[in-house]
Amino acid sequence: MAPLLQRETGRRALRIGVDDDDAVPPLPGVTWTRLWLEQGGYRGDLRGSAEEPLPFIAEAFDLVWLQHALEPAPQVAGLLGEVCRVLAPGGVLAVTAVHPLGGWSPWFFWKARGQGQSLQWPWHLCHRLRREGLAIEDVRRLGPPWPAHGRPASGDSRWGGAYLLLARKQRHLVTPVKLRPLPARAPVNAHLSPGTRRHSVS
Image (cartoon, rainbow, N blue to C red; front, top):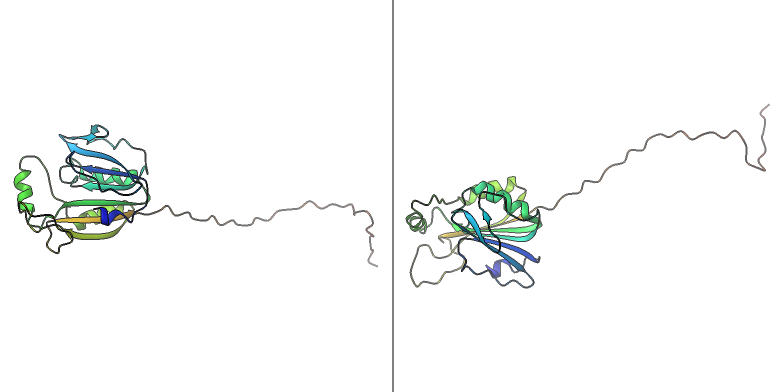
């Protein structure tokens, strides 16, 4: 993820994943807040319930990375709404997830049986994020097409088992206020200024 995100500017980043061992990309000047989902709650730098709002003020982060966090999220729509809330205008949301049509999906459902996890379609996420005011910048397949022990993860792949979605939060538009001049009545001074002569019309 480092080559994909290193062009982004900002100092505050949030990573929500599923494992405390997952590393964050070393981005220069970026301070990461790390959370992961575990047993219906958040663990890591902070603790809280996954069914409650994220414990951050609005627009607190310049970068948010959901690292396979949508699959186990108890409320996908709620989590997406919260990460959009804490994302600053101009900031980037990165989502990595298992593709429903990839070779990893059977492995995923086998591992997640009985846990209530689900896979999210990229086009569905794009639709939801646009409604939240984000612009989709990139959607691509990543990684090997199927699980293989001992095989290193590759980058972009047409048949990759995972996908990456990048979206940017739109900045607030300031609409200029058009002032409409109003007629004003100026008081008429009947007295002439000193040195002014009054001319009479005959």
